[in-house]
Amino acid sequence: MSAATASQRSVMPYAVLGLIALAIVWALIATGLWTDILRYRKDIVYLSKQHLVLVGISGGLAIVAGVGIGIWLSRPWMTRYAEGTIQAVNMATSIPTLGKLALMMTFLGIGALPAIVGLWVATLLPIIRNTYAGIRAVPPHLIDAAQGMGMGPGEILRRVEVPNALFVIFAGVRTAMAVNVGTAPIAFLIGGGGLGELIFTGIDLQEYGMMLAGAIPTALLAVIVDFVFGQAQYWLVPRGVNPQRNS
Image (tube, helix red, strand yellow):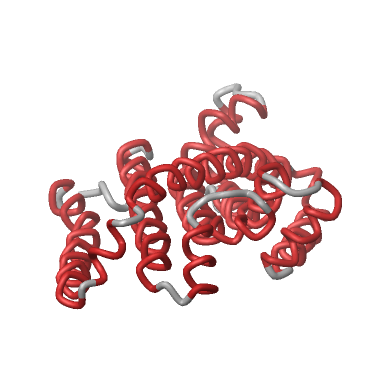
């Protein structure tokens, strides 16, 4: 399969989503809900910026921390503790998101800070797990060859292990960021702002136009974030270890 064909296949799902989005817009126009949604266009722009700030800060911190923890757990001296640590993170992540946010609110008060910390916790697991699994899956003969060339542990990590694990790491990041964008609306319930303000207020008031004014941009942001990280995964992962670019 050529690189051009692989690239087309990676973009195809988004083309299908585009067609579905057009069909949804047509249905909204036909039912008159589109006019109701446009009444909140200024709120959509303002709250989308808040939403992106929450996602950007919490997601960025989760990527840095998750990749770092995953690399740390993959070291030989951490072998006996790695699975237990990942299970502990899994248990923390399995707590319902609203419960995590309520817990953060108890210690950090109301506002953006507890929302960011709660989203950070909710985003960590896929990144840690994929980083750990990706590095542990690097073929031993590559590490042996690097050692034979005189590379030290740090150089082997930087030049052999991370590049070979990068595709799997990106897969975890994509999953984590999709979870982050979809979870961020709940931050409104503890004063974090974002598009959840339109969604939950619309539900309370039974204003479907207001609810959709928050739900549709949230879905679009999730698709855009996934597309951006998908393209980064395609172009930044070296060709030799990127199944999407192998001919």
